[in-house]
Image (tube, rainbow, N blue to C red):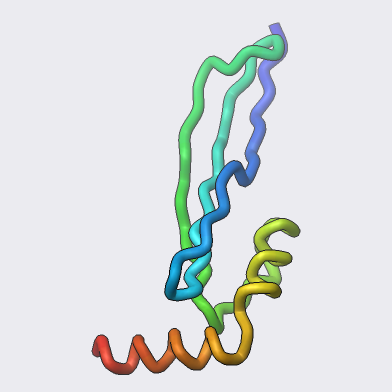
Length: 81
């Protein structure tokens, strides 16, 4: 009986506002079969530091977070407060 913990980014979504939603799945595997699993979600907003994110998340943020998107997002946050 071999137990293994796998942590993978299994879903990346970009919202209209430019916010990137990331879902991470943690699975406990026993002999190659999943016996337990949980999910964690977090967001990366335009203008946030994403250097510690998964490589795929970094690539999406780099493509999505243009100067225009960051400026529009930050302006929308000022209005919301």
